[in-house]
Image (cartoon, rainbow, N blue to C red):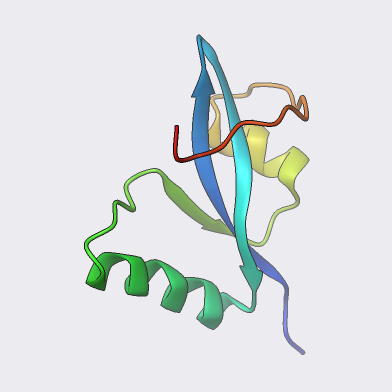
Length: 76
């Protein structure tokens, strides 16, 4: 059984913190995605690999912030 995993980018909009989903796949595919970014010299310090849904992951990785779906590009 394969569990769906997500790669989230931690974003900030002013003082608000939120997550944006960057990649979705199996745990192995997500870890490979992060390693590939590292090999390409792209930053990965803001990425989190998790099997949690975005609401639960926001509470865990954004210091207990409540989930509020807003659109922001993680490249900003």
